[in-house]
Image (cartoon, rainbow, N blue to C red; front, side):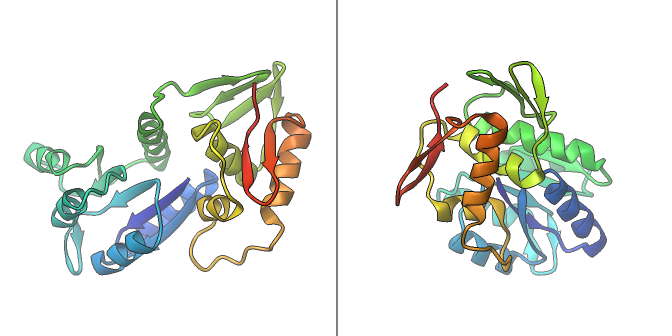
Length: 219
């Protein structure tokens, strides 16, 4: 899951960035709306975290413009504006959730997961795939009833497959979901993570289409 964070408070932005990374998600952080617009035109994001008061404008106008051009990327507003009228304005502009500062970082993680699941068409955080049981909210995986420990990158990769069952995902698409702008990615990184997932969850958990990409295996 790749997230765009639009926040000009460097202390809060760093904390949110670190929280997202700890959850095994990729994040690009910008501090201005013009940089956010450039990022959105260059990259496909799974979710946007949007502050409302930024150096070059108001987030509400940015959000309205986003929706007017047909961009349906889910948006969670993060703001100190705590009046009911502010919340109504944000939600009516097209936001999917509204979180008032200061907030608990664990709550932010939960809200990101909840919005992402709704957009995938399955709000239930529990997924069963053959012998594999996954709790998306708790970031836990069990195989034949026994817990399986995944690294943050392994979890992010597996989550990408679970969100798109049956869909072929190219190596480039998977790298985009796992890594932020400027990250150094070795040529065999995805292959290594796929191999480790197969060892932990079963050889058939991920299928390979040679020269094309990978997809979630049949249950």
